[in-house]
Image (cartoon, rainbow, N blue to C red; front, side, top):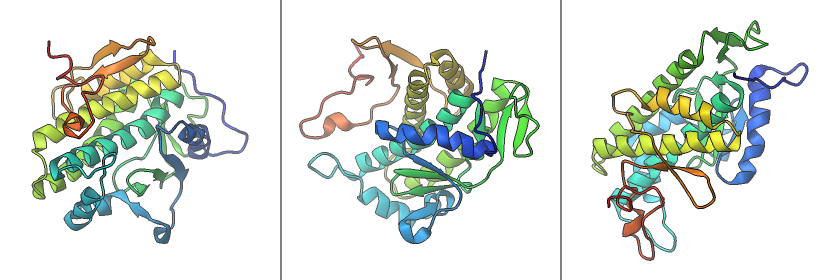
Length: 260
């Protein structure tokens, strides 16, 4: 059964959601989350205006760095795409898994700071379950079940990725199919992280299935392994190419590491 924590008295649903998620930034795994328009002169940009601009994306790709060295351009593009997918997946996933509410997160409804170090939600409107105790709030649009809550998120993520991947392939960085596979892997990793963080692994797996389980460009087989600490990790379908960098090796969930 889903449980929505009580909002602080007098707060808007979006403000209450951001207040719950923002402290997770200290973990180092989730960007700083804010609500409302942020100043462009401090580096905040509307996402849609960036991902549709080949010149801007080319500059961003060139700024992607490895540890102690600059990766080849194809790896830079791969890592940019993966960081982008992680950022959107972990922020939206935290809202859905943590409080069963989803803000408007389309490319023109959020701002980024840097390469995803900060995310700002621009609109107050959110989707929620009909069982939400604040479902009659004017900022909330009730939907009947978890699948209906996941549907607008899947549409938003597809919009983000289609636009960014289109730009990256226009720049001849990586094949589109490889980037879509990487995006699916990174979203699965982000949702699993949300499940662990909120101690809601079953809720996170349901979200994974709703976003990634159906045939399509975001399809992912959703393989899960257990590490030596008993924690779940995603068995990827794609390789992030990190092993090609000096001093690196296969990641824990790399398909090349599990090929045997």
